[in-house]
Image 1: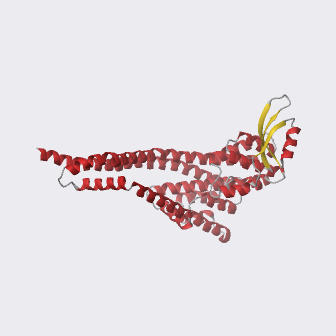
Image 2: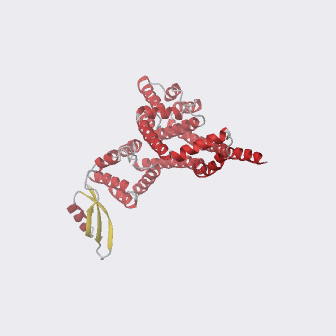
Image 3: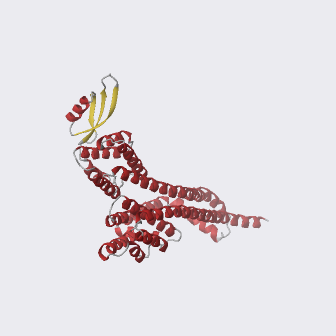
Length: 407
């Protein structure tokens, strides 16, 4: 199947344009004529295997954001509630999708569904666009006949995830802006102001104070060897990016995230919030505990926690230990969280208890972000003030000496 874009004339002579999924150009024309639409121009938007092209062009990238997935699943559930067939639902969503790549992927999924494939199997061919969690829940919904309910739960899940990411991003905007603006000011002073004052200070003749000599040396290094510094920065960036793509680099990064003061507390809460929300949503949708734990380990995005979760899965599956006991043995989950999970297991309400834990952790993440931001702002102000103060003092000290000699 391929996606064709067309310009055509309707029965009343009015022009129209759009896209249609067909096996060939002739089939596309026949389908348009059957709808009493007469094509003027017809072009293949996808004359090759889409899944192979996506893997070749974007092998490491996820193609959708939580906000896109939330919109897709909410639209899907709303249209299914009106008893509209899958292929028609997908066709309507395709027309409303602005992202060209995601639109093309949806067209391929629609083509597979029209050929008789299950929706989950069609989505599974594009793991960078449809996460494993979504595919598993869709498969569960199709087998149980609750696909509309499943899609609504997925929409709630991705909306909450997008909301959490938005809070984190908003909290980081101001500190990052302060850091960037302060760095620009310092670079301007060192590269433009200091060289002009250096000439006056060197003509002074007397021995310059140590802070002034340090400032002049730094200014000379930046202005005289800026090209070398840029080359070293680019080389360091490339090396760092390659190192972080390797398994050892990613493990080191994840360990640092769990070791840095303040930041580690926030990271642990975010990881556990995503895990409990994912696990609760999957269990509510009828996915068994083993599969739900495997998917929950994927969304943690931290190799230390993921390795611990693999041990939890083995303990639950092979040794028959309760989930709360297995999580407690990792020493990575707070005691209050394991106690609530234990209560959920004892009362056969693990899914709802996990949802409660997730909601509480989401509130704690927001509070921790606000506290961290409130702490980071004065620290940044003190750091930048210290740098600017050092520059000002380095300039004023020789000027004060000059003034005393002139007297």
